Image 1: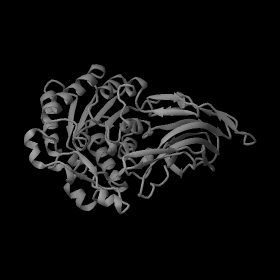
Image 2: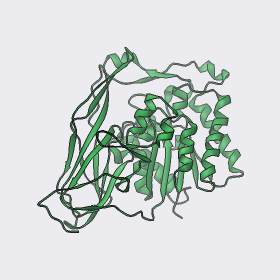
Image 3: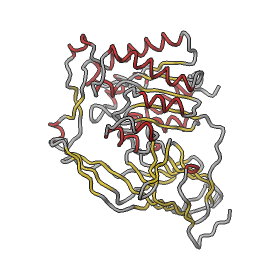
Image 4: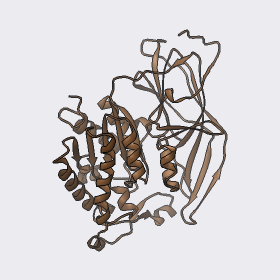
Length: 397
């Protein structure tokens, strides 16, 4: 490559430069990464799922270049709640040869305002924004380098144009193993500080693996199309974090839960018969440990400008088969133990080992449901040690 800083090079954004997405949709405005394929999206009209799967948690642009300046035109979609201060702008993390060196935001974009009291949502369209990175060099200087731009985990992001002051080349697939993970908003990234600071991203760096993150906020619901998507996605390691959304959505009773878990695992095993498969039970969450869902916004907190959640079920309803986190942990452990007798590659991890009662006392959940940045870091470190570390079920050995 020759670094010619006298002109910009515009490179079409194609699949060879995008990792972590399962499909790229060509829109009127650009390229929209999806974490579920079109056939799966067509099987569910839930707007929560549509929002979550289009938010590119774990999705990144990857290329080799001599460029020292990079511009990425984007069109974000941001969600705000009426009466609540808006969230900070989504973060774009720049990595050079695997090291985080810069973080930027993008202006512009569409704004979707949700009024929880009225039950309405409205959209205001905005302009394209530009993320600019300058001084993109290695520790050795202006050598050729591998560049990764991790997209905001919590903003739907259409990619409009990519410009550099030197040509770029795709990075050939390396020997690193692919880790395919599915979970709830906690896996999606919830209140993590940036896209490379979600607990799955942090664990993937420690484990030296390629992450495909199918964490969908509010939408880890044992959907058959998600299982089929995972079945058909090449992966060396697979994990499922199951439970919290089934409780706070009040989606099913114990009678349906067990067979649904079996069916989800059966489907994955159709495509991955011997791949290490880890089932993770829920983290500690006091509002739903003993109290069923549905979960709801705490309207008193919302009136004061804070987002918080509460459980609206009755603990006595457990006798009728309503799910709580303790019930789910017991059932998942039983199911995995039963199946592991014939599936030596199936494993179980108690979510309390990632975040338990003592962790809550030290690092409480700010909104009673989602971990903050410090907790994501703790969970990522623990997962890396327990699962990718020596003796772990995903260890390289």
